[in-house]
Image (cartoon, rainbow, N blue to C red; front, top):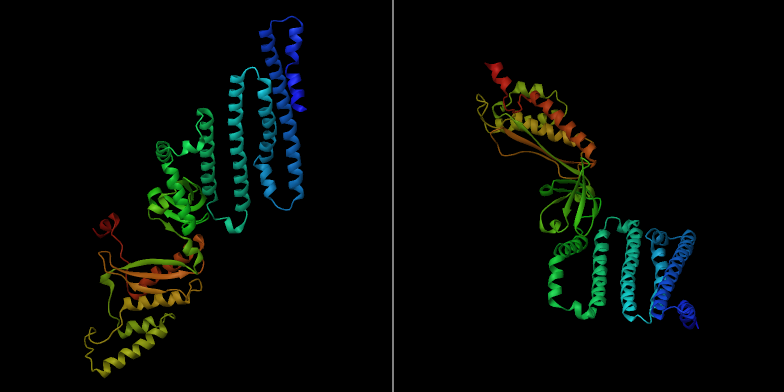
Length: 420
């Protein structure tokens, strides 16, 4: 019934013009132009009305629903794309009737409509994927996952399929036979080389949990030192601590070495590892008078009293000649300083005593003997960590002269002038 009605009205103007004595060819052309314009305006009007109605329905349903998925569908233009599909379907049915006497034109218009339908299908899929990504990114379980990478991979496949079907429409070859062509596959591999590498990298990053959004990473090659804020198919975006941004190729994260500080954040402490260089000429054995003076330092008084008794007992038992200080067992100012630093760390409430804690000597250098502080602070926040570290070094540097030691420092020009 509907088809007969459409056919009747599609030739109404032609019959009218012929009844007025117009040339048949001209009547046909005018009829196509007029009916085409009327049909086009009607389709656009229908599209406008349906779009407003469907969007309003979706918004109403999303306001009533408890989930946010449908809200994101509205934001991603899903209702609008769905509204477009109905007028397109009607156009698909009308074109063969309106252009019945011009099959070539009808075929071209149908191909254009088909291509638009393919594009519309891709946009619908993109809308669903974006909605899914936004919805999952709000959930705690998926907040640090590279959802952008998955979205881009799926969109690439979707666009690839859309391109195959479009070429199939234009060339007449079936999409399946087109895809199977080896040459085309080689071209695709060449064009999408970086994309394929990025896809492989994204999968490995996700499966092996190499990085997450929010991780602090250091990648010296690319000048990156900050927090990961985005992971997508081609690049990883890092916001550095100076508020600049660095983009790193995703594949580089599995092909090259970088530093991820997540383990530090998840552990019970942040490592402090600093050295103080002691001038070697200032190291000496301690006399009884030196030890007596150092006992006034509360942190090492118990240690000095205990060690002094052990040393005296050993030297007397073995009849050591103490006319020379070097004979037998002795305390050194460097050894006492090491014990002082160790006691200072153990007394500091900011240091985690359950984690590794040590004060040690490193290999002597031309700058003196490095006394290394190795421990972990409870507080892992950068600012607080630096304050804790600075307080320890401040104190130890100020304590060095009390042990008769000197901190090594390269002489400056002013030192030479003063000495001269």
